[in-house]
Length: 239
Image (cartoon, rainbow, N blue to C red; front, side):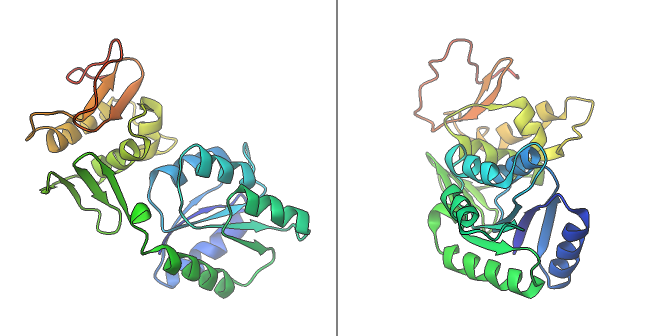
């Protein structure tokens, strides 16, 4: 499983990381609620584990925004030292699929995650993104347009996933940079280069273009027949 762990306690996060990686799982760890929301919404994880008490944004709010603002249906386990029924109700109403109280046994967390993921693996809406004739399979990481397989570098694939999840809405430059480089984007404008590479793969062989630039804002990806009616919008210039 590919799992995102949003946990403020470094010792707890380290123990979970060591256990899951030793069992053959891939784990990314984030200690901040706001950053965790961006990663959870942008990277196609099999499951997400969210601690309740997080800096900048608490776990239930992270989960609410993940579900409502980003429409992400990834299985989520909420971790908390809270044992009251009222707290569990808050977690489940925020969109949690399961609730684990601290302290907990790591094998229990693993089997709970495996059960959640096994029940959702067959859902096409989770495993495949579709915009017009463009498809991105989140299981195989294969992208196609009009049935033609597209070659994408890893960074371009991450950018494409974010744009497809948001489509037809715009995604800001800052959001896209965070997707690839996290909180430490490079000084030079590498996003422009990555977007140019993505354009060559997605739009180069086709007459109708899907990636559009919104000057001073960012980019958006739309179905080929979607009208470019916004003032100042360009398909050829760079943001």
